[in-house]
Image (cartoon, rainbow, N blue to C red; front, side, top):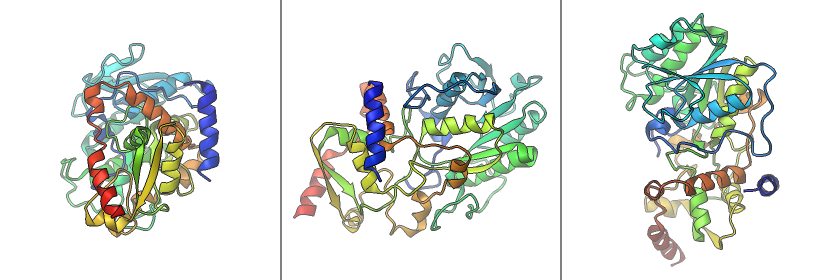
Length: 381
């Protein structure tokens, strides 16, 4: 796609847009479970290549080859930083031939990190508090800042909004290491491990649903693929229902920015804008990326609920127990430099990436057009 068209989409979107469970928010573990393509769209901004940093750093990334990690690595390199990655060498081991790769395991095999120093570390692969505490203590005197990749799933969702000071989930079994059962509570304990060791040198970034090239969950990807397919499209519930996600490149850039500016604290990272984004703004923002003939039919929330029909990223306000899912406040992060790409840019880049995937992988995204046709017929009847 030409830079001219990308700039047009960015400007048009800016002007035109004035899963439930313990890991409903961004989970680096889930996102990395199935590796994406070897070369997702780089983490550079849509409008121009990033300028070199005035403060080149040596950065260690624990992980680095899942979904979020490659965007962090690329953006850090664009900014002129020296990057090392530490992982088990199993996921996309040849992804970064020019980057130092240290092989080991979070569970007692940290030897490759001993005797080394870095300016900062990003911990993408910490899910068990014991593992995070081990790496934090080992690197206490070897790195200046420790940035931990956490999740919005640390919160109780039964709240009107989620700020960094909102109520967290209870820790029912602090000795458990069952990540599937206690994902959110274990992430809280991981955060505590980092802040206990690093104090003001610790940074915690709580992810929202992460979208963009390389995503394996298809939660955001469903919408640009479905809208580009065209025809009559169900727009669920109210036009005013809020929708939230974070573009993986915006997330990666904010994390590197925190290291460059030595920013500490805990931050929510939810977009696609600081102000609430409605479902109408969301679907019409994506509409801007395609010339396929299509129309939207808005179907009542109760009608869909009666038929137990769900759509990705749609959390109806009547589901009070999870109402906070799409009401995350990211004012602290924005004040420190977090920026958001327009909806149309994320959607177009995601669609273009999705088209490059093998057919078998693309077929995993189920549009369920027959179900939608039945729903539309019933709704009109």
